[in-house]
Image 1 (tube, one colour):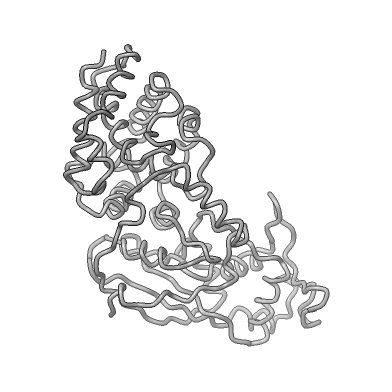
Image 2 (cartoon, rainbow, N blue to C red; image 1 turned 135 degrees about the vertical axis):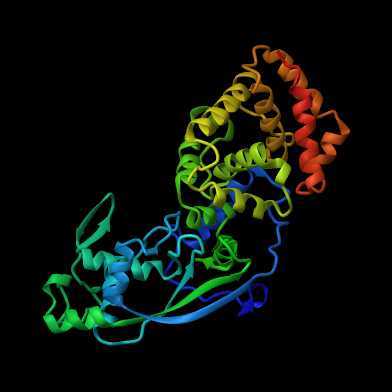
Length: 389
């Protein structure tokens, strides 16, 4: 066992890159960051974990079957399958020839016991595609036959062959080829806290671009809540307020923040990042609030904001300020518990007056993740909107 905080960054496969090249992704990330002002974004620090790891050798056929059975999960977030057919063919040829290939990294989900792919998804997906006989292209697929590049042909024994076309001996060689896996398991905290997986993902740098918090949550907390966040993120009035879809999922994270604080603010403890992780983990299958309730609370609140405050709320200095968003959304949602708001002019006046409150300004500009400041700004917003007709 070892302390995660003392480990070096796990090695990654340089070919597991985003669909955009590095420079394009960095520019896109910088541009999108201008849309949201979140003072807490770079303040979160994880606590100490006890992590153990062990090596496991998997035969290729067994890996493919585990992926088909969903025992090994390849996370479905924005890191697309980007290998060309020639590159995937070259990898499979290496296995057929008995050449060494890079290992993969897996993490045990303590709740489901599934194995999450941390590193190596391009290789694993290539194997799955080859065994299925289908290679993704555009919106569809083409037959997956092994093919080299013009200046780098494959071994003539394999060129042009699908899995079913391989000689029986070659097929058995591929089936029995070994890929080494390093399997990571969180020992402490115990129970069903899988938050260390979050930080392991965070420390991986894919194509030079670090994953953002909500991208990581979308990888390790898949379920009904994630799908609901994705659906709500397309809601018309929300998009009118937020603007273009954020490719790093910051807009989905804001929706998550609203739910977590609206329902659990009294249980809030620092860091905010861990608080959001815990809410998403505990509610991944919507056990505590129904989908109908969450949709109603969010859409009613956003509809009221859009109708009464227009398309540029939550922006004291140009960009959406996440702490201001938290407070205003919470305050309006609490008022809506008594029924619809009919006096938009009164709400606008209360909203403008709130920003003249020196305590409110202090709560959203300094120590923004301190429990007292979070509860303070939410309380002041709720009080400001409580009397609106």
